[in-house]
Amino acid sequence: MTAAVERPARTGAVARLWALAGPRRARLARGVGFRFLQSVCAGIPFAVLVLVIDQLRTGTLSTASAWGFVAVIVLGFAGQLLFGYLSARDTWLTAYQLVSDMRLAALDHLRRLPMSFHIGRRQGETSAVFTNDMQAVEGFASNGLSTVAQALGLPLVVFAVLVAVDPLLAVATLVSIVVALPVLAWSNRRFTELGVRRQDLQANATSRMIEYVQGVAVIRAFNQAGSRQESFRRALDEFREISVRMVARLLPGGLVFAAVVQAGIPIVITAATYWLLGGRVDVPTAILFLVLSLTVFAPVLALLEVMETLRLADASLSRIDRVMREPEQSQPATPATPSDDSISFDDVVFGYRPGRPVLDGVTFTVPARSMTALVGPSGAGKSTVLNLVGRFWDVDDGAVRIGGADVRDLTTEQLHDRISVVFQDVYLFQGSVYDNIAFGSPDATPERVEAAARAAQAHEFVRRMPEGYASRVGEGGASLSGGERQRISIARAILKDAPIVLLDEATAAIDPTNERLVQEALATLVADRTLLVVAHKLTTIRHSDQILVLDGHGGIAQRGTHDELIDTDGSYARFWSERHRASGWRITTSG
Image (cartoon, rainbow, N blue to C red; front, side, top):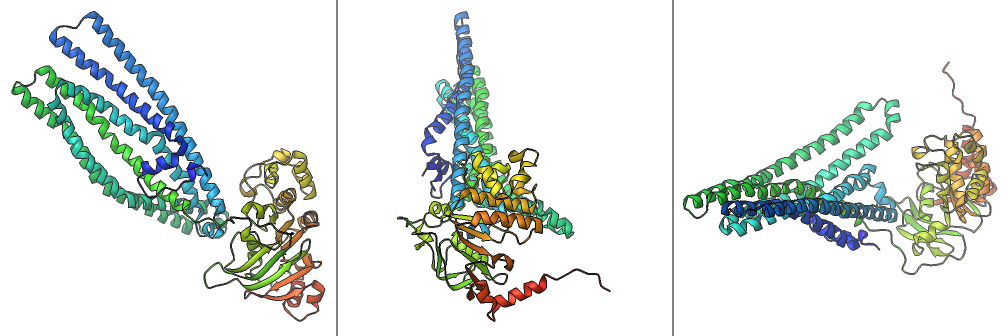
């Protein structure tokens, strides 16, 4: 496991970022150090100014020393450029790589979480973690830390020069800063709770926006633009309200900090004037302190802006931690080895909500290289059975086994290597047709991809597309018809060549022409494999080796072949009869 997936305890943003940096800590620290040196170089001209004024006052300034001072100033400017470049190189590249590692680690973690986590969250909430929150962390890692170093470097150099000129006046310039820093720390603590709440509400607004954009066709069809816009507006209002509250709470602390820091200027003026009138310091020294003290206070005031990025990064890291601490689905310490490709349910109990089982004591076996069909009323748990075999959820009681091995005793890789899933609602990823077919086997050759497409009855329509297999499918496969998406999905499953196929009836919602092509593709996919299919059209499962009829109350009402069940007075016979009556249904005008 890389350092990017460590989950540090709840501490400050800097400590947590340091823990996440892992092997990149040295480069990040080096980049911050270079920014400090850049700031130190920015203080060189002020140190030279002190020397020049001193030599002018004593009358010892010569041409040679003047050129020497010019050379030192040029070197200072060169140092600023060099260290600025080195700092940007190290901090920005490290920040990009660090956040890239964090994104990849978070994606891998999401992949291992149970489906209940994903079902219970809006899309925008997870998207916000990968966009807004990661960007906030990246911004602080790339610029925030080094800006803090820069804010310290110049004041320290100038303060050292002032100490060399007059220690008492130098201490006077430091009084307001020492008093102001606790105010800044207090203001930062007040942000913590509101910051996380603000980021949560921003994620909620993002979710509403995504929901609106993705559902715009339905919104228009049902003339609900106003109500959905109002929902989005409410989310934005909540986000605005928390932002205003946050500013209202932070503004007093920021103003007090700025006021206390800037109070250092009249303190220096008062001290310099008092000691000047008392004869302790001369006029050039007093003027020098008045000029140089400004260079001490200005960078310290810049810390206010840095603290804003620190606060956002702190809140964002809390939200990222919240996701990363979600418990992953368990993995076996010693993986089992299935003896064959059979599937069995042993007294399985499962429900999506506590106390409301969808399956209650379900037991059945699907022999290897056989076809078992699942039928039953809507909500009876047919798709749930497929989800449990793929271990998208874990059973509440009992066991689901493949080849005699409990699926919980198989690693995710073991399980998914043995299973291909063809869903009724096909999702294709943005990219080309080729990419979506090869998703089932990324190392496949172009010849194998085309062979899978031919077997899935997809080659002909792909060949007619403008760029063939390189044609883009659009988000979710939007540029393809339902039947075309389904055949791409089947080609993906054929290319994977897994011994077990889980099929959520792929022909339920497509036209007769595409249905014939999809059926031919499925015949290739399921040949000589273990097949568990959810059936909506009973005509497609007449030749199943076994049909299981779910009763809608968590159990199996009937089981047997088509011929056995059709001759029995039960649910299956009634389903069959109702399907035949429905096939003659027509839409007519009244009268």
